[in-house]
Each structure stands twice: as C-alpha cells, then as structure tokens.
Length: 159
Image 1 (cartoon, rainbow, N blue to C red):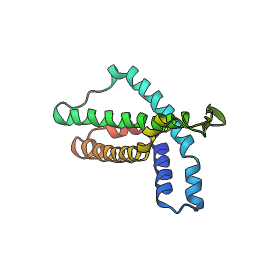
Image 2 (image 1 turned 60 degrees about the vertical axis):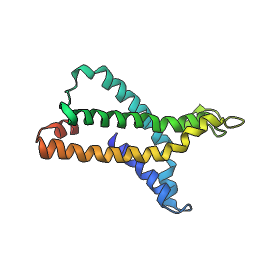
Image 3 (image 1 turned 180 degrees about the horizontal axis):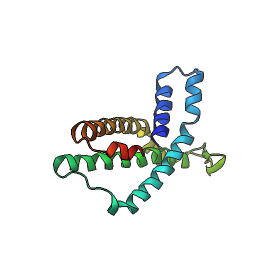
Image 4 (image 1 turned 90 degrees about the horizontal axis):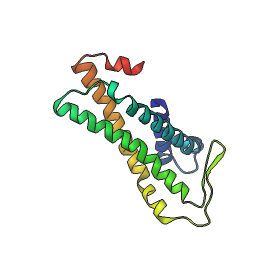
C-alpha cells in the first residue's frame, strides 16, 4: 500500500505542478481515480482486519508519547477513508458518473447534486494533509523506534 500511496501523491503533485498540456501530467493523472478507488478498498479491508485483530496488537507506550501515537494513527486512518470518500460521493452525484476497472459504479446523472459535490472541494487539501501525516509518521517511526528505542518494530513492519 505504501507504494500505491506514493504513486497517488506523485500523480497529484504532477497534476498540480506541471503545465496543463503536458504528457507526463496527463499520464500520471490518468490513473489517479482508479488508484484512489483501489486504495479506498484496500484501506477498508485493512481497517476491518486491524479491528478484528485489535486484541492481538501490541500496546502503545503509555503516557503522552503513547497517546500521541494513537492520535496520529487515528488521524491517518480517518483521512485515508475521508479523502477518497469525498470524491466518490461527488462522483455519485455528478453528471459524469464513475467507472472502476471497466465497471460502471455510478451512472451519470442528468444534473449534479450540489450537496454531494460540496465535500469534494476539500479533497485536495485533505489529501496533502494526509501526505504530511504519512511523512511525519515515517519520520517519527524512524526516530522513535530506530534511534531512541532501538527496537525491531521497523523490521517487523517491513516483513
């Protein structure tokens, strides 16, 4: 999933940074919707698996560090659900519809439904907040687990 998120953020960065008539921009943007929907499905599956295995997960360190770790994980997971959901909601209420891997998920509507479009106005901004949280998560994992605690958490996460 990490590589898929990296590809998703790369496509968004190219869409934002490159000129409108640019082949690289168009190529990278062409998979943004499909990859976003794929990530949404994977996040839902991973979330369900995580909740089912919650009693078996190691506990966080107590105190402020432990509470900060829990809050950070909750924020990351919340945004991993909310960011794609806002675009899927907009697609469900749009005059373009949404097709995923050749299957029509939402048919085009005669007219857009405004309340379904409104939350997607923050899709991009929330996506960049998610990217920053993920980068912060990586940095904190390296600093805390590798440099301070010197435990094997990063090796276990890597497989």
